[in-house]
Length: 322
Image 1 (cartoon, helix red, strand yellow):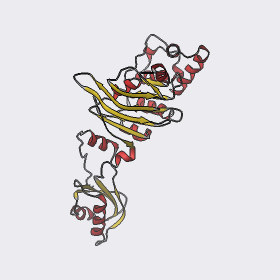
Image 2 (tube, rainbow, N blue to C red):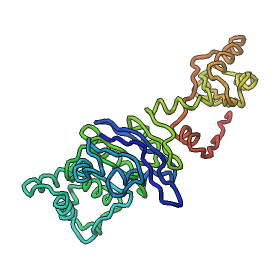
Image 3 (cartoon, helix red, strand yellow):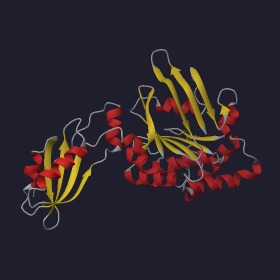
Image 4 (cartoon, rainbow, N blue to C red):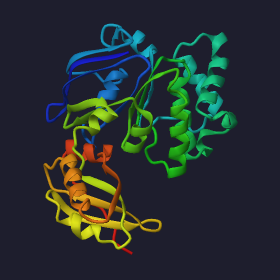
């Protein structure tokens, strides 16, 4: 559905997109990640035909965006980060106007507008002035705009930017409902949104594509940095023993129910978590402490993103014994 080959956008003083290549298959929902200024929005504007590239090739649904721009644009719906809406128009009036601009046949417009409003959950606001809508509803109207011509591809640039947590959940639910019938390229800063919604992710930094793959594949790029053990340890003696295991930087323990405790072992750099688990069980086997579970803690997408883009991550708060 999307084919990008050696895409470059050079503004003279800065190269916003630098020799980027990737593809998105039909029916996929792909997250497009990167820190501010990484080149995400520039790339998406080029894909949508709103910005020309310095070099490279882009095809949308088999149409080259330079050689067949109208066909390429007709195959996608684009929702920019700051969607330009007309506040003096009512929702249905605005979407009908947009359907006309997208050259939809007159006989199909009303039905298409109703469908788009239903998909974006904005039907109850059809006769409301856009100026009177909350930001969450304005985002939904912008999404309806992208959907009104029933394109097979949606390009959504920060669709939940600036929304409060309740509005984010609402818009996220709407987007999830579109995944069965549309291919979606989604740019967002909310990594949990990518983990719960996307099949794959692309990571861009300083204009270069630095990683791509399924969420599990991206997670596997970062070895587990901690191990958790579920122990039967009434006396609480495991913490001291585990702190002495080779490769353990710090041991923490938290009481659960009865004599059950959860121990968390923070690992030193470049340590194999399986080696630590083996050594920890060997130490505890010499005592009356029972080991019920031992599991490496998988890296979160946030940790992988921070590592790939060289962001600073803190260790977080410690869990102390009660």
